[in-house]
Length: 186
Image (cartoon, rainbow, N blue to C red; front, side, top):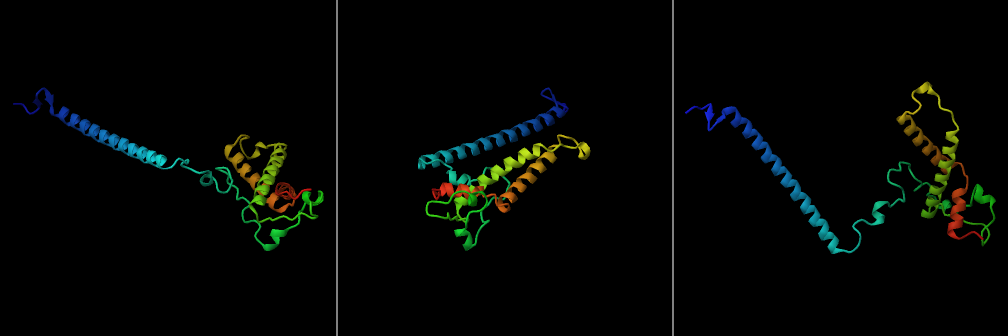
């Protein structure tokens, strides 16, 4: 009997067929393991859904800060923390507008409503800066006119400009929004 030729196969065919069979068996085992994992995860999810009729993710879990996903600005939470900020006078635009029902309106700058009012003012300032930015002519001295990295950096820079202007310029839009939403306007 010839060792080189057993049942019509050469010894090299035995080796290559053995490796292919081994790899196919491993692949099948990994695929089955993956399918078992997916099935167990689906079973757990189904069991959780059957335990409660409520949605699996509450809106409070999605965004407790009322910010959009991917919004990288710092926000306005914790900007005002002193006791004087709880009974502040309006400034800027709101100080020049008419007084409230009971005389001078009082603004609680530590409240969540005021933080949201500042977010809205910040959005308006971003729009203003964006419009002003469009008027600036681009120079090709620093590189390509459509450089993606430069555009991204400028977007972040102008977002931070808007945030700093909102915190420090005293436009008073957030104060006016707060007064209107809190019901102090006459």
